[in-house]
Amino acid sequence: MPGKSTLKESDLYPPLRDFLVTLGYRVRSEVAGCDVTAVLNDQLVVIEIKRALTLDLLTQGIRRQRTADSVYLAVPAPTTEVLRKRHRAVYPVVKRLELGLILVDPNSVVPVKVAFHPIPYKPRRDKQARRALVREQANRSTDGNRGGSQGLPILTAYRENALVIALLLRRTGPSRPRDIRDAGGGGRTLTILSNNVYGWFERIDRGVYALSAQGETGLETYNSILPLLEQKLDGKGPGSVNKS
Image (tube, rainbow, N blue to C red):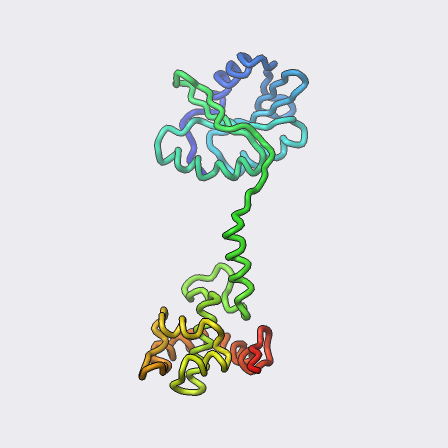
């Protein structure tokens, strides 16, 4: 959350009050626990003031939504590019909570600026990213990752496929891509072998591939999920390969 300003909350009220009065609102402060209340044409607006855009301010704004027609958060306007960048990072959260934001600088020629008004949040999904996510999730036959873990490379569907091919090469020794594919390597066998993204394979003859020393290391790295992949190859686990 953006850092606190040297301004006091009480410094922000006068310019904010004057701004609202100019718009025709009847303004009162400290009403039923609300920092600022403003009424115009039976519309009740509540504004909560803080020295920084904090989690406490967000939760306070959410509580005010129970009684007000519109709720704004008022904070000091950021004075440096670093602070402006921090503010912008929080803006999507404020908007998603359907809160408005007002920036106040008592020393500015324009002391009050409405950054944005509270509007109903309508999420816009990235359909292409969603399709890619669903496809990746569907192509993983095992759950070899720990959510939030760091250090071990993520077990993507591509990496899982490469591990299956490495297992087959360990079992059968040097083989042709077609034979590996038919044994359970899948339709991307030739691409994975020829691209050799992880260095797990080596071509020892024309059209013949073997497991490299790096490949053995890769299998050891993911040793905990190898039994699941072996079950898949043997037709005994989820996502089992149909070799017929």
